[in-house]
Image (cartoon, rainbow, N blue to C red; front, side):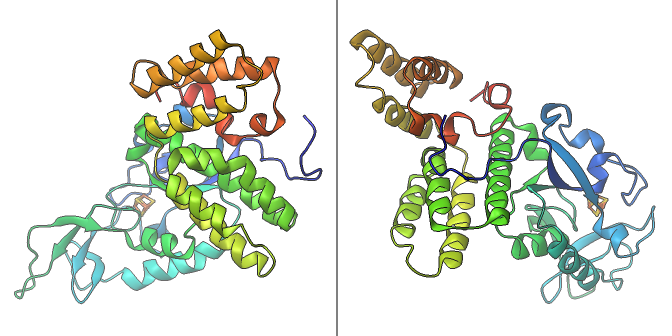
Length: 329
Ligand code: SF4
């Protein structure tokens, strides 16, 4: 295929660099001296990533093994010792995150250990401190101190918890986000221009549409005028794209995009072929076919009737493991 924008940066090939809670690599850094390799689906993501492990608790100088900590509500949420609640690690953990985040600009994503008062992304237990200094029953509404600062300082970086990656839909979604983000980073590194931004969007628009029609519409409006503040517009664009992609695509979203892509072939397909593809898309929408079924037929027709615009759509190929990771969608 000829490049629509001749020097348009290619999406990087795997493996992409991924940050990860160090215990998920099997390193024995947990409070009790254990690792947690089995909590992360290494086999399902084999070949896609290289990993850079960080343990914030070890990073602030806590030993292994060490007394466990937890989140307590005490004039805000604090990370304190379970046995010694006067031992407050909040500021040290937040400081470590603030020092680390600026060094992570090369990462395509970050996987965090669930439930941890340092690394947990959501639903971490928070214990209310009572007047007598003891704690009440916890509620699952907290974010680990390190994870919270990371999310704040790197809002576009794809983040996910290890437990959610055992779900095939959420796993495919995370992989999609990391490859989109890595592609964007490459474009920024190689030089942002208005033409490259438009080309990037034209390749990702149907992928975004499958995940979020409102985000798709917002990005279209945002890029309608690129005459001033290109870096500012690009910053808002990637935020909208990453927020939109963070919503897993529904069957309705996929079917909508498939119908749009089918439209590009309507003049070259005969009536029975159009009918067959339309029926497959409907069967997929009803849950009677996997996504790969209409995609395979669409690809077959594109092979016989190449359409550069459609073939460049990232939707058809959001990551290098498309067939394996999309088989349950
Ligand atoms: S969850 Fe985070 S802080 Fe706890 S052991 Fe793992 S990497 Fe270290």
